[in-house]
Amino acid sequence: MATAAAAFAHPDLVRSFDMGDRMGDTAYLLDTERTRLRPWRLADAPALVEMNRQPDMLRYANEDRADTLPEAVRWIEEQQRYLSSHGYGIVALEERASGALIGFVGLATPTFLPELLPATDIGWRIRRELWNRGLATEAARAVLDWAHGPLGIPEVLAISNAGNRASIRVMEKLGMVLGRAATVPETGTPVVVYVSKAPAERQRVEDGART
Image (tube, rainbow, N blue to C red; front, side):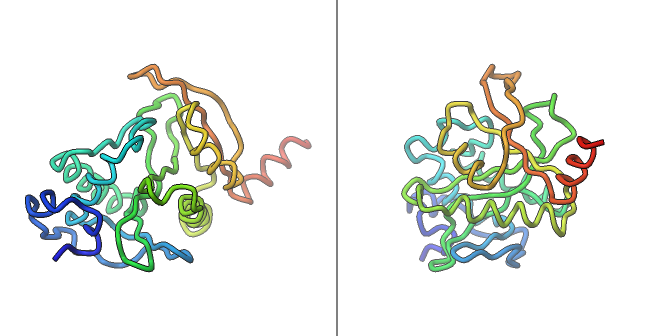
């Protein structure tokens, strides 16, 4: 029987993978009305591959392709290490109603754009059949609240391919503002950089502009 995390995964992928979980952390990090955010498990790898192989899923991906099982395992292990060392990261996104893995959301370091560093950016990916339901916005809003509140991160970036209107709409719904345009050095891809500032940081900037 497939686990909830592998509910969408192709049976061949599930059978070919050792479903053991090296991290063993089932605690939820954040809850929203329709989703739950939790640390990755290696058992999520088949469902992650299945999602990343959906049509158009990686059309605008700058990194994090993970569309083969070895790549997915390696990527999940990277996210586990990042979460352990930073206290935040890109985490698994579950549908509350079913417990199924439906994507990911979270915070990372945008190493693919060195000119922005040091910086923290937010990213998300949702299964294709669940697009246009507001799930990315709902989960990302919870992550921004987490970043600006308990984590104390004053500024969070969101980086999107300049042609990815769906992602840009999510950024705008989150109240993020366009900061600048940039180009990914390795690929030459034009991107836009949106910014979310914590309330205290916005006030500090506004006060500085008035002096």
